[in-house]
Image (cartoon, rainbow, N blue to C red; front, top):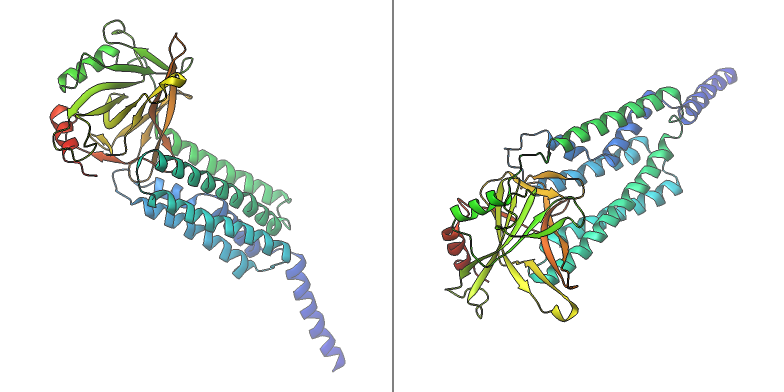
Length: 371
């Protein structure tokens, strides 16, 4: 009897030792799965496969992003278990960072979209959001290593991980290059842009015109008469004004000024401000106004990346748009700051589709805006 009991105890002991000292195929599979779900933007990659013509609400992306991360953590703690004190601390730091990022992301979109205060607050929140995401990924990677250290240095595991990483990078690269377009030799000239403005009754004799490219400071002050044959990937035109008839916004101003962007043959318009309040410091600005959205004629929207010299396509329902300032220096030491559009992972600015960007449409739009 004692011999029989010893055999049972021996089997139980061997079973426990086998599962604690060795890794099973299930353990390896679930560890890798948890690592992929917590470290890879799975939801973005999967939804990126969906036809861009299908409208997917932006909230779906962010909800799925966090749900996938939570599922990854549940696999660690409910299936793999082995929760030690260091793992618990690492998980708490990663979890708190992820939770704060949720609040920061929500705060960016709940801020009242009004002027320079909005920009400052949104930028501050977005910096905290980005920092939290970085902290999350760093500690989540450490958590993955703590679970995978039993098998990760073995030949098969290393090969599997390398192949997985290569496939993910390859897929992400394909997705990236499908959303950019190289600048070629057939870009619109200054004269082409002038003709486009004339056709739309947006041309005026008093204007400021800038061409954007990847040379020197990226921004160049030009004019339609002397630079008609020059070509730039993107243009900024400040000149057309709408009579402020109804005084719904800026009730003390007689005119509402428009900034016209012309990028990759696409035209966009947004109300703008000419700010010379800092001229005593030798600079002034042309700034986007937050009285209206950026107007476009279709949902195939482009921004120009002057650092990498290519166009970036904006998918309205899932891509963010922000702005950056380019600075043009005059010979007398004065400079002007100009807002240009930029693709971002978070959204400061909203686009609105209208039938046609011309003088009649812009005038009607501006005079129907409310505070």
